[in-house]
Length: 307
Ligand SMILES: O=C(O)CCC(=O)C(=O)O
Image 1 (cartoon, protein in one colour):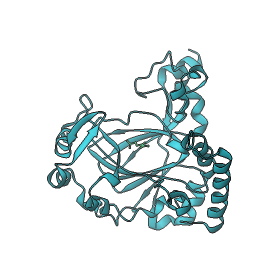
Image 2 (image 1 turned 30 degrees about the horizontal axis):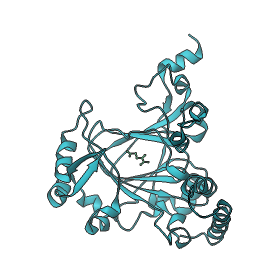
Image 3 (image 1 turned 180 degrees about the vertical axis):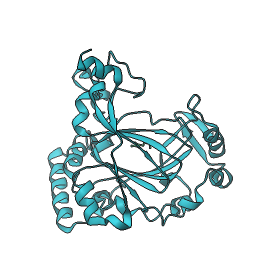
């Protein structure tokens, strides 16, 4: 059998390689030098110990204290109590709905206080600086609650080339990741074949491959050549998934996660390009003015090593 056919049959290859470091041991300087700047994924332990959520946020807590909260998942309206019942009973054959990317700012203030202050390993985050966030918040802290067998619905890298920091409160999740150099094997939406599809062109960060376990070997024949990483994330751990890294997740045991997006010197250039092309598209400001502003902000924040 040719190498190409073999790869198609077996699917992508994954290594389990990801470094883990205790936050109090690694120190900020080494973390930025060895992981943030070279855009290398890493798991940081011990960075969430100060959060009341680490002890408080159980499934019973959400059901008893916040059972009446109204939620909406993929068009279905349900209460928090109902979600928790389904999450606890979830199986891979019949997964519960997965609450994803739920803005923490929509939650009651007491819950927001349970995840403050934001973990230091998510900083420096230039999106938090007033030069970026004075008009509107640019960081999104989001909540995820899901049961065994639920999957994040797309293989993607985070929008506008932001970094993703995924902070695990309860349960175990399996993540897979592909470095940016694997993009040719990942069937990006909006590639040449779809040049007439305007919406797809706006989604250069999403793969057409929806189910990475059961993918269409005819349509996505190159996917089998991709090389990635596969690993689990446990309570108390923070995953740094760098800008441009493709990733997706599946839940192994009932799970609660919080995420935040971030930008710093390592991804400022890619963020700036996406920001003026996608975020500012169709707005009144001329692109040259946006680019000039971003150039100034990047230089300034780099100089003062802000936030
Ligand atoms: O933990 C997950 O389900 C994946 C979340 C994720 O990749 C994201 O929100 O960008």
